[in-house]
Image (cartoon, rainbow, N blue to C red; front, side):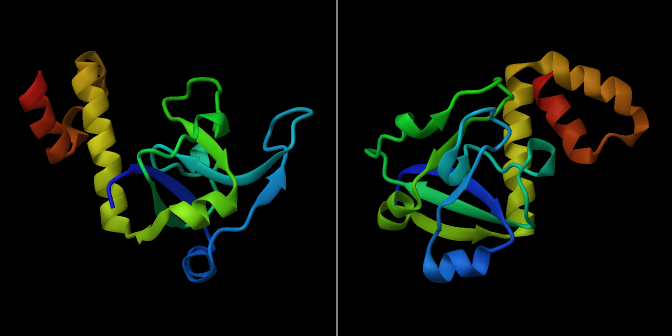
Length: 145
């Protein structure tokens, strides 16, 4: 299935894969606003961004599905988020679990794309890392710097 890919962090991957998503309700750090749905992001998030859980699910929604009304427009933290009704995801989405190695690769590809867009950030990181920079990071530097 082609479509738009989202990610959801959880400790309930097996239950979701077996029975579908369930809506959750909360304020989620928004004063005076309560949201109900399933949190999706355009990239894998972790505890640094407030996502909880050890499992990562990939959710693919059809290209023609307009989720713009569910997008949470925030502080431009470098990623986008949506709070989508579970029924919509369960009806139209395809869900699969992402393994740790694949999650690492997804994260690396996003970092590499960011560095290609702003090479000065890569140069700064290399300056700080010095001899501790990974081989993968050094290879990327050779490619784009």
